[in-house]
Image (cartoon, rainbow, N blue to C red; front, side, top):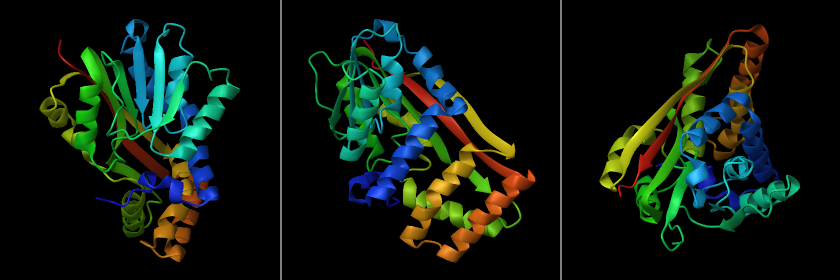
Length: 274
C-alpha cells in the first residue's frame, strides 16, 4: 500500500496543508466535478433522510452541498481524520451561513460513532482510495446504516488516471506512478467495490460512471499536476529536476493545445436490506 499523504495531513507543513485545502475547495467548484457530485445526490432521496453523515469530509464541500438543498431537512454530520480539514470545513460552512446545519467533528471513517437506529445515508466522497483499510471502511459504514439505509461511495479509478505531455511517455509514466505512491493508497479499489459491498451485506443499487477528460487544453488535471508536483518531489520518488521538466512540458503542451488528461470516476450506491 502506498504512503498516502491524506493519512498524515496533520503532520505536514502549514503551507502544504493550505495547498491541499485550496485544491479541495477548487475541486468542489469545478463544474464537471460538481455535476458528478450532484448526480449522486439527486439519486439518494435526501428529502426522506433524517440522519446523514459524510465520512472523510475534507473541507466539507459535499456536506455544504447537502445543507444547501432545500429538500433536506434532517440531521447532518461530517467527520474527517484531519483536524486541519475539520477546522477549515467549519469555517467555510459558517461563512456560507450553514454553520448551524452541519455537525463537524474529528473522526476515523473506519470507526463511525453509532447513533440509535443508524444513519439513513453514509457518504464517502473521494475517500476510499486514500484509507489504510478500505474493507474495514465498508464494514464500518454498513454497520452504521439503518435497515434500508444507503451507502454512497464516490471516487476515481486512479489506475486509469493519465496526465501527460505526450512527447515523453517514459517520464509521464514515472511521474504518474510516483504521484500514486505519494497520494493514493488504493488506486484500483473501485474494481473491488461490488465484492466488498456484497461481503458486508449491502446490495448494489446503482452505479454512476463518468469520464473526466481534457484533450488539447485543460485546467482541472493541469491544476492537479501543479498541486501534486511538490508532493512527488518531496517524497523523492522522482528527482526534482525530472519533476520540474515534466511540469514545464505539461504547461507547454497545454499552451500549444496538445495536452491530454483523463480519469474514470464512479459513484456506487448500495442499500442495507430491510
